[in-house]
Image 1 (spheres, rainbow, N blue to C red):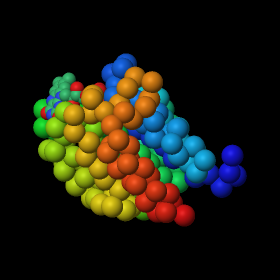
Image 2 (tube, protein in one colour):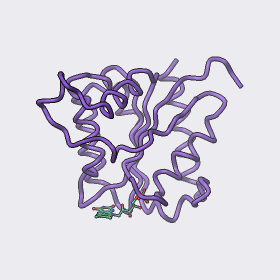
Image 3 (cartoon, rainbow, N blue to C red):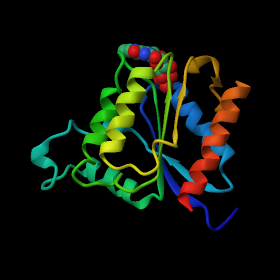
Image 4 (cartoon, helix red, strand yellow):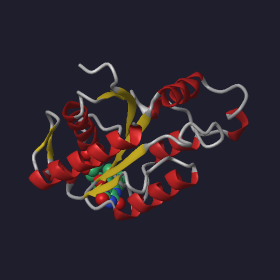
Length: 178
Ligand SMILES: Cc1cc2nc3c(=O)[nH]c(=O)nc-3n(C[C@H](O)[C@H](O)[C@H](O)COP(=O)(O)O)c2cc1C
């Protein structure tokens, strides 16, 4: 295994047990193992609701840990479904905790929206990531529709075109990290 593997924090916008976004992240971790050390963040659902009064002082421990994991990573991969034409609340909540502390700023960040449709949530989250200065996000974004027909539970991408698109995206991500 290469000693120069870059550290990547992966975040799933779905907290569902058999999430296809989680399966996709598992597939990505497998296909990039030689170059990337990808850790999937435990659960954004454990973060408390964003509270501006605890943003800078008296920061909740779970938030401090999330910020530390982000700060410690060379890059980030977000993989998320769309809910009601928007970004899942738990994912938006997690990102809101990073706005003032700026962990995303200048950090190469991949955005994959993997959903039934996903177009609205994808654009909304892309704009949020731009405004918090996530690096290279415009060239590191991919919308995968009908996701449930394209990954299996064991973390395998079963659709050839999706496999090729994800591989191409990861090749660009690796270049952005070096
Ligand atoms: C409350 C709710 C709302 C949803 N709304 C949308 C939607 O607006 N657009 C869409 O593409 N999919 C929508 N879906 C379907 C999810 O995108 C789909 O179930 C996806 O596979 C969930 O990702 P996961 O498998 O990683 O949990 C919705 C699902 C739920 C539970």
